[in-house]
Image (cartoon, rainbow, N blue to C red; front, top):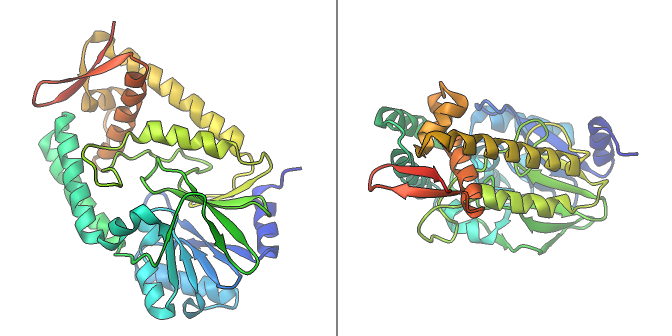
Length: 335
């Protein structure tokens, strides 16, 4: 019988794996970091760059008989601020090795420059999608404040898809699963049939497949939702009784059922957006307004990512095409 989330945490604790729920200033709430009591003492993700988060992390480590100075290895699932913010502070105190998906290392190291480039990319995409300039300016200001919760990270151990991280008593396979971010990484323990999935799969909300600049520096944008669904197909193939430990919320004890739910939701939303094109071409902003109306400024880019992602799916099916008049890009139903 598959264990409940509570039983999964208890069983993990017996294997020396502990969830450390760290506060964040974001609507998603606490972020889950995971302590693996092994040699080296390992931490999966670190929490946002704040004094309160550092205090809570120190307190929770102390509850298991450890301190920040004891951390020997940090594994990073992806580059979002609530998962990387405390990394360099921990390294300064412990000298820990930092392991993350190798192609993302330059982006993590050049954090300040990279987030500026990402903001410029987002501004251009929003304007070309018809979002009014006043909303774009307001969101750029919000984004600048958000970046303060992150910090540069020096990756000392670049990881490759399929590589195995060997601890004294754990073997963690590196599974590259991009979509929510360009560097989403799952750490899979085949012996114990458990994995650390970051925000790749969350139990109660669907992770937004955020459109971003390609990780390899090539021009254009990621087709995040298309990529995300491909990553889901791979994760769905993990053993049926696997337990997945997410970056937010409770352990996932039925990943196949949850992924199937995400597939169905995506299909429904895709068809609803396609129907909205029945009256003629519409911009990404117009489609988002029709879907959700009264979108909060802080959600404008996320909802745009959702819309464009579903348009990418429809375009791949030959049902939609882009029309670019040199100003605003619109989507048009084909046939």
